[in-house]
Amino acid sequence: MLPTPFGQDGNIDHQALRDLVAFAAEAGACAVCLPAYASEFYKLSEREREEALATAIDAGRGRIPVIAQVNQPSLRLAREAAVRAAQAGATAINLGTPRLFSLSERDLTRYFDAILRAVDLPVVIQDFNPGGATIGAEFVAALHAQHPHFRYVKLEEALMAAKTARILQATGGSVGVIEGWGGMYILELIDAGICGVMPGLAIADVLARVFRLASGGDREGAYAVFRGVLPQIVFSLQNMELFHHAEKQLLEARGLLRSPAVREATVELNSHDLAHIRFLNGRVLALLDELGMPHNPLAARQRGA
Image (cartoon, rainbow, N blue to C red):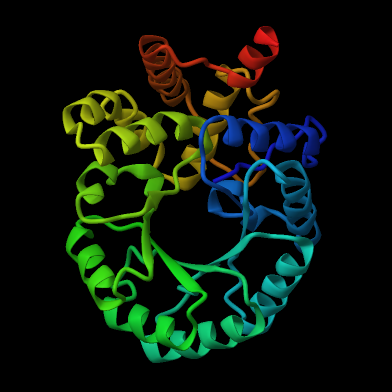
């Protein structure tokens, strides 16, 4: 998930965004996604969202696929945004489930059916509902049967291994399950059959290594790497605004972001929180050193060129 970099003037830093796309490609990410919660999409105007997406698509061309995030709870606005993203050159669409108020799966079927009829790109449906149940295997299977280009579901809840297995069984493996929530549950879900994880960008290369090790049967090796980043994930995801600060400060510490600015309204961090962010981010940097992984692979490549 790509963050939105802001300059000192408060506007989107499009060159910095290009650099982040380049890092994602270098880090071994399969794709990038924006503008999502991790992108502070809810603080961006519609024009800014489209401009950021256009920049990422241009920067990723020939290097890495770009997934367009659509989070509007209004069906009309979501459908229009999905169509514009497809026209702009997005590789896929990530549709956020509208959870502002409680909706039944029948209601959600109408919402997604209308959007899926309007676009033919591969679609990810993302469901995060900390206050209640998320979409189930029967819902996923029925919607996929109507719209085969609904290819992935992204879930961000605890204890979802059994649900992952049910979705794969109900769809014959035709709908892949992606784990969100910063990659917090990655180790327990690989054996259940998840096809990928959408973490924050700053540790994408580390979690890519965790995924490769665990998928290859080296659970002990995967655990040894994962425990080095898990405290940072757990601390930062206590609050989405806290996550933005921790994520951008880690990208800055890695030499990948010029400014860690987070757009207001956001939390004001006290000295204790700032000190702990720096400590945890420092442990991530130390882990990279232990693994022989560069803090900034873009700079490392330039030095080797």
